[in-house]
Length: 394
Ligand code: SAH
Image (cartoon, rainbow, N blue to C red; front, side, top):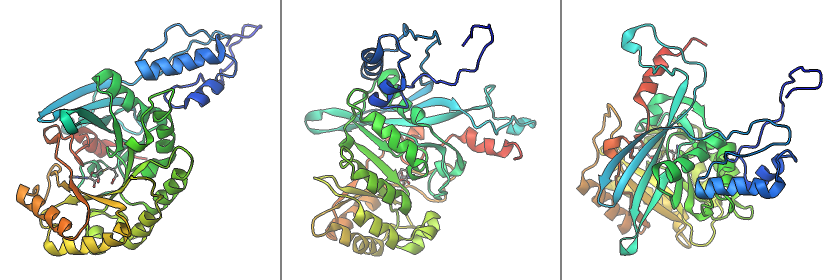
């Protein structure tokens, strides 16, 4: 801003970002600086989220140019399935500034744009009754992940960084207005562990469910966690607030006992299954929403009859007096260089039958997007994974 004596003073005030704030926060944050006042702020926010219209004629009282930081979609990949196209798309975000190009050509896997990262998101088609199709958007909460689950592709990258509220909401905007698919559901099952970025995950849900903005129903949003108990407890407290009680929670259990779980999910050594079960029991249950327990079925690891029995015994306290839990069996999608194969159709069906025999409400998650490396647990940029080899010394 130019002052009377002609000197340039630093601009401390940041123009409000409609991707990081709820409608009310956005309107208030203008602080009287927007010509047109509150009605104009509401119009900017609503038209952006509801119609995808980016304002070009915003005038501020003190003449600071107003620019909205838009998502940068770099690639879109499609796989046709009988239920519709699975679309994986990548948005580019700022890097950490910690990576430097390699000097050896074999490791020189960086783009010319060295300090940027790619965030992966997937639109998954679902068929409801009467052939009615809707989409679930799988969003990432981090680039990479620190949890180290041995069966997951993302874990191979390690954690690069957590995403901001804007970068999470950008994924919804990119699906809706760049890819052209308005998702009914949003699941935090992309890259990253949402509980390791919980503040931003909660704030992004507040924006995504804002009635004057994206207006996604709270009951259509699910946060999936590796089973970080303190995170579940924090989210439980949050889910007791008005407007939040229909938020969905999914727990990646993936094993019938501590021994197996610790061998494939390092988090289990810090938060064993008994603590995890208590956190699930304490999750506020409202209406018909069920807690989802995910179980990646890996042949030779967790798919025996005895495992089904043990799993059922573990889940039973969550299933009575009324069913509180829905088991989701996910056939393992081999990660790159996987030591395990995918289960056969018979192995998957068999395991589901055993769980039903044990009276545990069970569903199968259909595999979609495998050829794109866009199915569960397959998100992860190989280039970035190699990049860690060329990371600058800290
Ligand atoms: N960190 C979160 C969300 C990301 S993973 C979590 O752990 O829940 C989303 C789901 O994909 C989890 O249930 C996870 O167990 C599952 N998953 C991970 N790798 C997989 C793979 N290779 N095949 C099938 N599902 C996988």
